[in-house]
Length: 256
Image 1 (tube, rainbow, N blue to C red):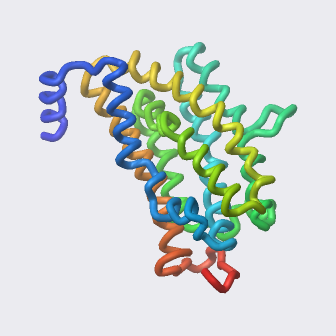
Image 2 (cartoon, rainbow, N blue to C red; image 1 turned 60 degrees about the horizontal axis):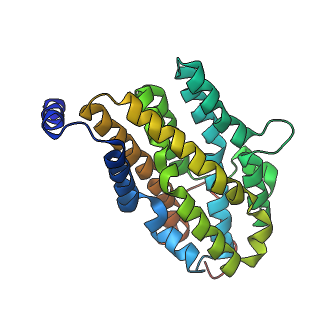
């Protein structure tokens, strides 16, 4: 019934233009992106403790480490060599290419700047179970849904640049001791808009019906929910009520 209803609404509404599609995708970001999450708001207000930032850097590393795996899954599903050549850039951006470090290594530098041991971070020592579940669900989306939806799920890059710029400003303002670990964000200021430009044009060109366009929009909503869920887990474990599960990272500072 839900599918029939969506198809009926699609026929009545008509295909979205590229500009209309971009507006709807950006509306998803405004409503659901994790820039509004209470954990990020605390970060931007300078109200997170040292240990809370360590917990964030540690858990976010698991997400960062899965990005090239996610992109490799999408790459393997692309039947078009032009698509594969374009998408391959994302894997190199995060894994590096032997001559330059990638995003994963840059994030490890950030984790080290918080005082974490890089080997422990790389091994996933102390990562929240909810972080693993949320990130692994992202892999399920790109593995099990259509290639169109898998590509669309990456479109948080449409609005990530604004959050990255704000995050860099606030980290430098409130947590100056982290300034040496912000290379990851510097690189993403350039990479994210490039990636978003390719992905939105791919979605527009390959979503042939309004139903497919709506599926792409829903994939982006689901990606936003995954990012939000990761911060929910951090907030519950390390802010309020501050109940980390067994085996998870434990905060050391008295004020947390």
